Length: 145
Image 1 (cartoon, rainbow, N blue to C red):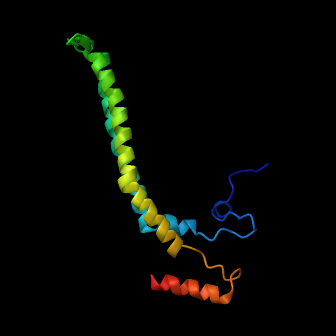
Image 2 (image 1 turned 60 degrees about the vertical axis):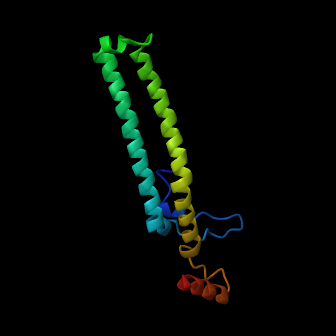
């Protein structure tokens, strides 16, 4: 039985079925400007969406708790409390729709840029496994970029 989590190096370099280790340097990818931009944009979007959703929910709970007369007022035969509850459902749908739109238009192109730069720049040299000419051509391709 293990006495703690596996070392980061064990998780960062998995072995492929043929016994070789993965040639992608995940640490360098995580430190790349493209990856940092992707994660910062996602985190910013999530923070804004969470603040809006929780803010609306807090207002609803505050009104339901402290303004019961107001929430009991009817508008066109429908209590304001019911309208506020439906607003929560609509807010959930709106945030989901906005996220999907953001994912398609902003996050997907950023993910593609990260993937492209990772395959081009962040692979480890595996000179021991590759022939000498292949390692030299890999370095030449990287320097050309």
